Image (cartoon, rainbow, N blue to C red; front, side, top):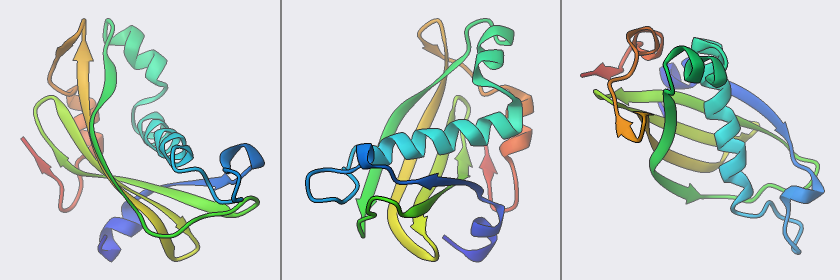
Length: 143
């Protein structure tokens, strides 16, 4: 992630609790998925309001994870303060390509590339123009 992307990323602080860890005391790998889901949700909330509002106003518009690739680099432990960074890396017709990092201070623990599709009634639809504008920024391609 370049410094411009880091400066523009949405940041969500998270405390690691016992329930997030496995028997070794490290964060269980699937817990990172929950942390990143919260990061994506809060990014959208900050840009477009509650997803429940989008669902109602968009007549059933929802976002679904289509693809996700993760790279686990270092573990977090119980009581750590970590931060989930989320930013858009590419916008397509019906999908957002998001980059995410889970960090402890400046140390990157997990990196993820996520493709989220915009769906209504089980079919992909074009991202709403208001969300497309909000997600567009320097270095973001929009199709």
